[in-house]
Every structure is written in C-alpha cells, then in structure tokens.
Length: 78
Image (cartoon, one colour):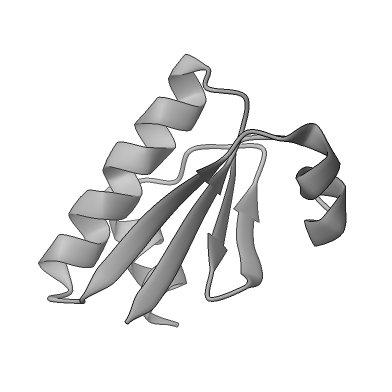
C-alpha cells in the first residue's frame, strides 16, 4: 500500500494537490491511502517550508506547487 500525505493548511492549492495525487494513483492502479497533514509543526518534521507538499511513503516528492497529473504520476511511481 502506498501512503500519500498532503501537507498543507487546507487551502485551494492543497485541495487541488489532493485531487491530482488521487487521480495519479488511480491511473497507476495503486492501492493507496491519503492523509491530510494540517499541523504546521509536522511540516517541519518533513523539512517542508512551503506548502502544499506531496509526501509519498515518507519521502517529500514535491513542495510549493501543484504538479500536473503527469508530473504527479512520475513522483508517485518513482
């Protein structure tokens, strides 16, 4: 199972990142779970200063932007 974590305060970009990540994982045929992390203290645990951020299985893959669907697929698969 792939763990996708979306780090952000719940803003529009954070919600967009959640949707892009879910769609990418669906298109890759992955079994996954999504966790929204809204606690700013936990952002620091990941070393993230700019949100939204995408964390895949504990590894920060993207920060400060919403990747395209193709970019998200590469980030999640890679």
